[in-house]
Image 1: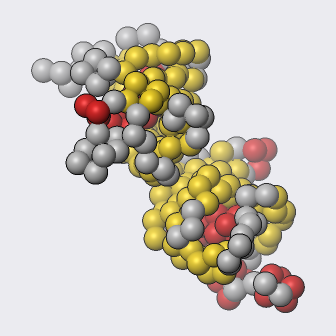
Image 2 (image 1 turned 180 degrees about the vertical axis):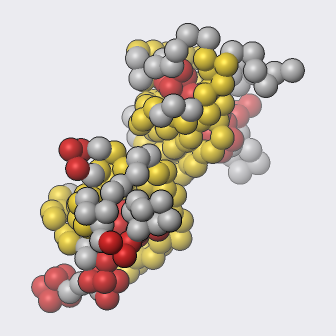
Length: 133
Length: 123
């Protein structure tokens, strides 16, 4: 993957304000600050935004394993919403690969808010196309 | 648990390990351990790990569970390690990893449980 592609952010990432914080071997941390227009009826951060953040962090974590992932598509996403997140709060989602198969990969994710408060946990299954070894 | 031959191998606050010696009686027609068997020990490990942090005489019941099966198992000792993610007033969140006899990750699960007073829902 070229450096430009590596750095390029999708339209959705830009729209949600997702930022890559760090990557490790099999892990990636993505950050998002809850904006006013992301609120639900209760005035807290909408769960769909948290889901998108978790999905993105897990998707990004897949790209840190070798042999590389050319293409990844989520086909299953589960989220547990544990604590409400406030508008203005910065959330950090850390995705971790737990299974790296040839055709499918499985990742889990923890989303934390200010002071390390657990906001959500998630897991996902991804259909992947991997580079030849 | 008894029917399956599973047992509690370790228990401490917030963490419970359930073990099962998988054999031919646990396999389906495809020759590998049936997913429901793995789900059963993961569910038990999660439920019991949550119970270790609940008040006396309060138990819990699973209201939602998700599992990913990562590799097939034919036989050998299966270890389901359940742990607490968070406990709210009435909702309890748990996770479990299931390992085979060689310590390889076989399945990962997560669940939400509801706190219930002892004896309730058994009539």
